[in-house]
Amino acid sequence: MFVIVGLGNPGKTYEGTLHNTGFGTIDLLAGKFGIDVNKNKCKALVGEGIIGSKKAVLCKPQTFMNLSGESVVQLLNWYKCEDNELLVIYDDIDLPAGKLRFRAKGSAGTHNGMENIVDLTGKTEFPRLRVGIGRPPEWMDLADYVLSKPTAENKKLIDEGMVKAVEAVEKYLNEGLDAVRMFVGK
Image (tube, rainbow, N blue to C red; front, side, top):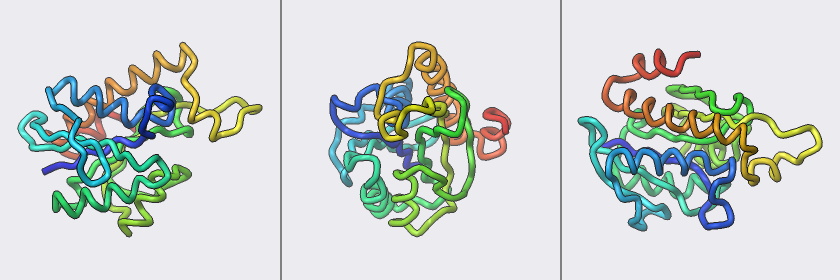
């Protein structure tokens, strides 16, 4: 079973914010594959279903971004998945709005949610898919930026990126690492 985790913050206050790009991608996956992500389990909203030919669980941690690892640890213990069966989707300020980057392993970089996942799981050898949200204006605090809603121009690009991220997840699950790397590019 593949465990696909989209990072974000729970609650109406954070809906549509840049930091909830992972949640948005999970919502698109759920819609495309008819998976209801509405069960409370492992400090997350989860929904189980089939993506292509693979069993998958879509997850939206409800711990708030900086404590995402608490939920991910419980999900890994519950579903007993291998490292390559965990896929984390999240926003990235270091990528232009809508651009994707897929890695089979790596560090947390500057993302607090990923840092908490790496710290609590003790693992870096799991795939991650980043969706670019662009950098904040020079005058804006980073925390304020990621917790804000995108401009109309960036929203269009990020929405396109999330749609492409759904395709990337499908390729990863059904065709493997090389196929998703070719699809996403460098």
